[in-house]
Image 1 (cartoon, rainbow, N blue to C red):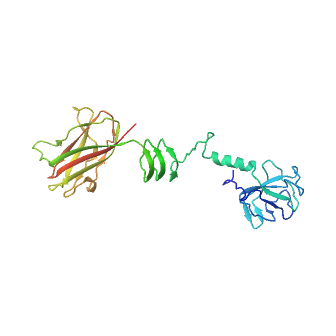
Image 2: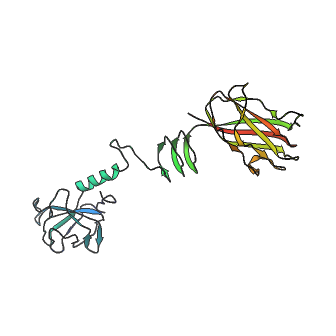
Image 3: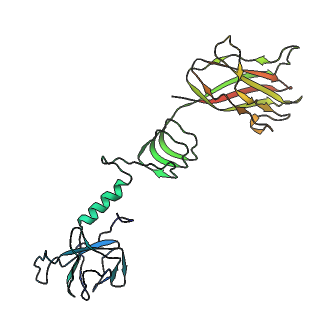
Length: 295
């Protein structure tokens, strides 16, 4: 197969003649005119004689990769089942569609298509694609998509999507709030707990966000979110580094020490409950977990 598809001539019924004789082995052929010919391509020599009589015994198909002046260069002799042979000066040269065009196109398409015509790509990374409909079973990263319909079960990272319809696991935001000033913890009380929330699906926790309308003034505000297999079970923190708000800060995204989630996979039916560990004089607290459904 050629590095690119063979071209047809730029006009129909392109004809010219040989400018000089050629033997059966030369790889550069000089023509009287190359008007209409496009490289790479295929021409037939001596299909007919000067009286328009068919000459099958003299007929030879040749492919070429370039055109220089009036010369066809990079010529391959005897293609499409023909035989390389000598030709006289003035012999008819024609640009026609041949079996070489067809087989080259089939070989070219089969690189990324199966026998049913479906597009098959084995490349792990696709930088950019434009398509009418795309169905993907697994994606590590997409840089950009532009399409009317997108169906994706799992996306780790998409930098840009331009689509009329996008289908992927819906995100779920679980939120807790505390109105007014956060309570001062009683002596001997380690935390102040919120109500439990039960997971109704298999969830993957992607991120946590904590904010207040009244910033902590007495120290660092620290919260935790615990996981419970049953309402009466002992809770386990989902964090290795708990969310904090520094003095004077209003949201956790600006904290000096970012939260680190270690327990990201939740099964349907388990429970979650946040706790205030150090109120630090803050108020109007909101805690949000962003999750997505897992199949």
